[in-house]
Image (tube, rainbow, N blue to C red; front, side, top):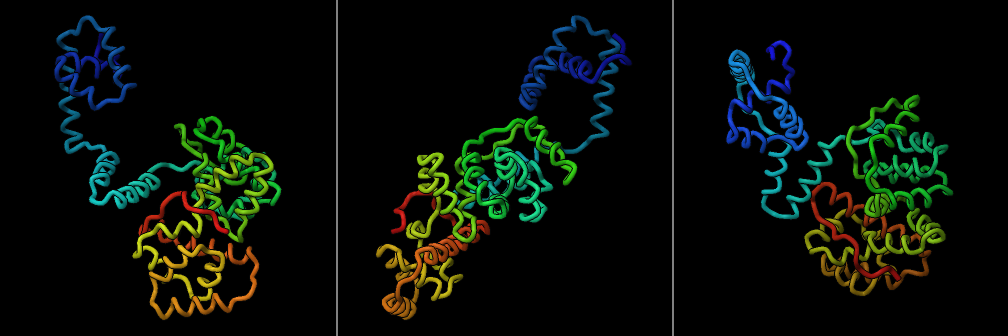
Length: 334
């Protein structure tokens, strides 16, 4: 055994054996399972450490201590724990979500920087399963915009496939990135990534424009009526706003003009109307009541479109951290 022929792993094993069991067990607490397996496997091959090797390993260790003096920390873990300790569970959860989404590498990052129309054109010739996987790796709003620009015949199939996606191996993502490399030059990730699933599909549909989510769900019913119904139950609708506290609801109402609100209330439940009226001035409430009484027949699609635009305002405020929306539940619109 010569110092020149020792690998880095050999030197670690020698150092730990020389430090003793108690010190080694403390160090193991800071290592990953894989690192411990590698070190202990190397330790098991050692049955004698010459004095000159011991002294040189310690000398190298002390030299490293001087060169790398300072504080070694697990910054990401520290920040995460600090956020979790923040007062207010809702605020802490929101900050934690923002932190995790900002520090985790996103698969297919280049697509996130491209225009939705361009991405849709690029994905149109691909198999729906490939399109579903790509959309699952993107931010919800960006994925919704891309889906909007895809051919109508593809949309429901793609959303349905998103609901069925769970974890995807890096090999699968790598194959997709290789196929798209000529156009956008992507680099694959190294670890399994949680993508897709029911919640991802719901989030994408919640951000669709022009009431396209209803068309997609209607088409999906032909393939899997049960899944379409499950998505509907989880989607955040206009009627779900009734569950918000007064402050949050008032924040949303400040972003909506009276004409738009009047149209959105056309098919709302009486409970929903009363909740809205209670969170605005009596004068404004009386004006909307009068306008509703005087309003003639309107297309249901126009009402639903206006309701969805208000829901999207609420979601935007949630993304900005100004309020927290409840998930799912509530009665369907009539």
